[in-house]
Image (cartoon, rainbow, N blue to C red):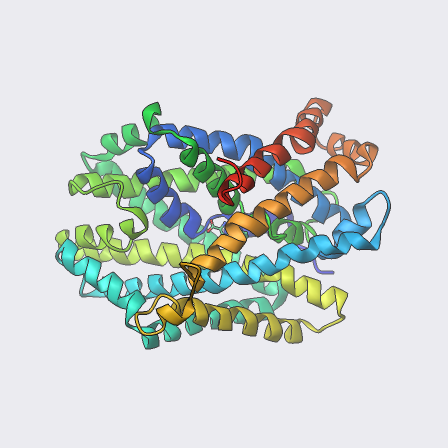
Length: 445
Ligand code: TRP
């Protein structure tokens, strides 16, 4: 099997982690929950829960050098074939990818808008966005096809020539654009306001929902729960330090979320706009602000949306790879055949997702009060991913020899680090996630 270089792995895993979750979702959820206190809860969720599961997935992948299903069978004490069912998690990747590709399509649309006709009022901006997602079916299908086509083109080339290469190009470019935007934000008077919004805690805003949102966000942003990190770590060189690599990736991911937050809130506060605008923050509030800044605004708008596209594409390829590796290894398929199958699945589901938001077909694609798009999000983020994370933790805590785990860790890090991780993985994290899951399903409150 071709392997990443160590830095290639870190870049690819960071490329997977840094995505729409960092630049679009993190700022708007932070805005909705009032800033600082939410950020602190989020950082704790990353440190204690997200990082624990991230290290778990990295360990498993690196150890087995195989697809998700085989990984569980191979690393279990019993070597019981039944563990292959843990491979269920890869399907969540295809489902997430289908609507992620649709959202990336919207962003492509905003790259185009940013060159010339940005909306000059909030009302117009709102209409532009609503029209796009509810009326312009043809445009959306075209944009979704462009995104899906690019993802398929990249993964067809494989781990080394496709995934590693694209990350090697796009991640530094993303870094440069964000750095530029941050420097610009620093020149604005409102930067200090953004800083205090994000770091001064107002605990009155924190309720149970905020805790759940923080935990869910920590999971999503680190690409956990569908086998992405496991699959990438299967291509991590055998000798590489999987604990340290995991920490680097979590650090890069967290820094970029914080930087994106600072940039966006500086822009919003500069224009006196609301921080709690929800999902429309990036699509509705920002374009109006960019418009007010004239030509400079166009330049900033283009840079911002291009950065989102880069971040999103490197995440998108990481959602399909676990399924590809699974089909290639377990069913002896060529990469081409696996890509055609998985590509058709997520592409078609994406069409269903976008149609379900349209005025024309929405009603037919709404079931029990949720449209298909929201169902796909719910089934993955609220059901499959938490279950997968619990399975992974319980597996490592109870069905893998502790001795072997400890050896793998102590090759790289002090035994104290292992002990802390082991307690987290065996007792604390599965319980915390189970509470999240039960709560989201409405079983407990
Ligand atoms: N982490 C990415 C983001 O923040 C999304 C992502 C990529 C993802 N791969 C994943 C989410 C696997 C869940 C599982 O946008």
